[in-house]
Image (cartoon, rainbow, N blue to C red; front, top):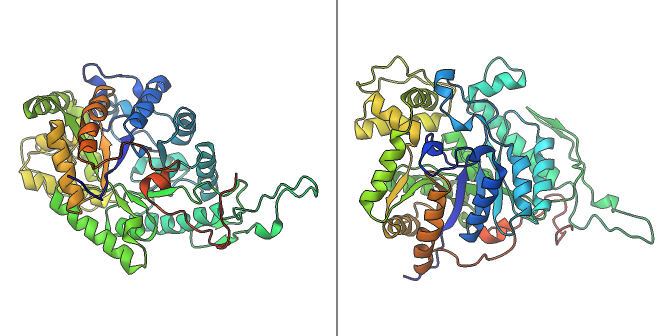
Length: 448
């Protein structure tokens, strides 16, 4: 069918698969998390598949689980996103490069400078995934005894966003005149000094790099709690959404887009992209068999530790073959805990079953043939459950190759996905406007 709505596809990389056992699957690159040659191959395959972006997750501490469980995890080691993505910028031409950077344990000047640099180095393909740290162990790496409280993390995040975007707007787009005859490199009147003094932050500015090619790198947000939804409605241009079923996803989509409109924002200037774990098979049975084999490779010690992290509560003492007991409130991710509890109740899972699911991947999954997967994606797009997806591959390179070589052509045949990139910047490819400079609204054009 012909459609005016087009899927937006990001690739959620951690920096490879989110699945705990991905590195153990037959044919998978076990060392891919820390092997640049493999990551280069993945990025170029994504670009061949016309993906919008390589979306790299990050955390600022080794996962908070016991060593006997942690030893099964491949994510104990990975590159720093803002070191890796500039390298990938050199070997790609169109693929967006989205990095996670926490507002809880970073300083806004560093974040603003690094993302502005990435945007210039990539000729306008940078995106910032604005997160508040959910891992309590990160606090200990930054001189704190306790994790910052949930609501305070979001208050700081909102102020942090204002400071970073204010720093990006330090220079008008036409500030750098580079007049060889006069000897004037820039026009002082086209420079703004921020002088921010707020509840959590004090930053003078200006930023010592020209305004980003895109004005601002694309703003991505992932929180699904009340505070996270409001922050997204106010600031985000892409939401890495959650939704284990289409009904919940539609409700989330309607809620966040409605909040945007109340704030005077155009609903089309935000793309809702839930994470989708995709397993492709020649038949539905083959795809299910792949998923089952992958899940069977999750070690139980790792599974129960992952469940404890997801719940923000130690689950090691729970009766493995009994139902999930009531879970008290914690300082961990509230939306994440709620999804896990809802999953256990909906599917009547025992603690053991729930741990095995969470230890692999417990969110939205499309498991089937290319036609089946395209059918589901089309339904989500056409019924406003999403604007596309952040694809999670079950293992690499095979899961990535399956999607690019088999699912993408089916989506293109239905005219649901591009055959060529629309532009050269991430904003152009996502259909997002370039923001005006808040201090120099009349300036036009990008600084070179």
